[in-house]
Length: 156
Image (cartoon, rainbow, N blue to C red):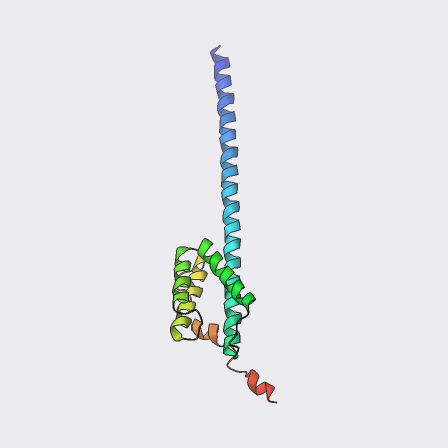
């Protein structure tokens, strides 16, 4: 009888171990799937915000003072998604940028937007301040390359 008991206990422990392994694997796979979905949602929000903000800034710098409702809706939708899913330091940088005006017309707004871009870089896996020594603001906000002028090309 003891041999049968040992065999049954061995089978039960093996089955229990396999069941725990399957459940644990399933839970970890679901968690990873949710994280991947959230990462995709966050990246799309970042891209939509940067795109909408860039379009509005370019339009303003080219002299347009009226904003299309659809452009503002895209911008606000992206802001909401960032507030919902981004890391807290990205949300703080967004709030700071928006609190300062969010128009990119003043130097403090440009610096706040640059900080927001750096925080977004961090949240997607880049090292903190890995671009601090670069002139990112100039790259972000110069609409035309320094060696070419669209205005002079138009007058030819």
